[in-house]
Image 1 (cartoon, rainbow, N blue to C red):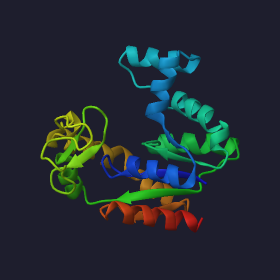
Image 2 (tube, one colour):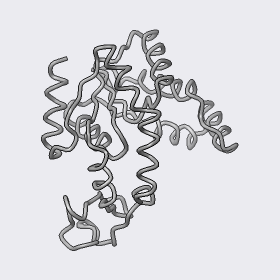
Image 3 (spheres, rainbow, N blue to C red):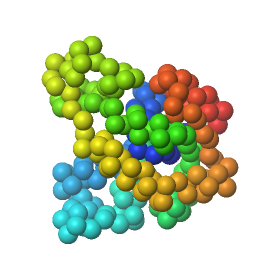
Length: 215
């Protein structure tokens, strides 16, 4: 089962990918994590990526895909994988499709996290996270037991810089311009499946499992 999670920032893709990883025992693969790991390990691909980042440039799509292919050839991906955060553009999707076809590993489904962007802004602006990595809460939808305080370690919760409203709206515009066209791209390939990402967390997971069970 090879699945891509598609949706705007903050739509819940990462959270649900982790839950699906545990439920189905297939790994969540994040290209951002792969890049950071390769750079830390000093691999040949990591050094090449570091060179682009040090010069202020973007890491080329082909390099990201090379890292991705290296990862999905590992034994734990034999039963499948969940791609979270890639591809972000039609050009990336085309390059990925070609690379996976050469490996005989076509994508089985693309799960589109449908969400009203105005509701998404509300969700992100109210998000608060533990600085020690113990989780996240929401001032309205999932408040901590003690306002402003992590339920696990008692640290003061913080608002990420990316969760400031002006930055959120900039990210949404980038999503509309660069990533939203993937809905049409994958729709034409008959692998697109849409879910209501505004539903409660367990209901969203149920939708995903129902879709995947039908593959």
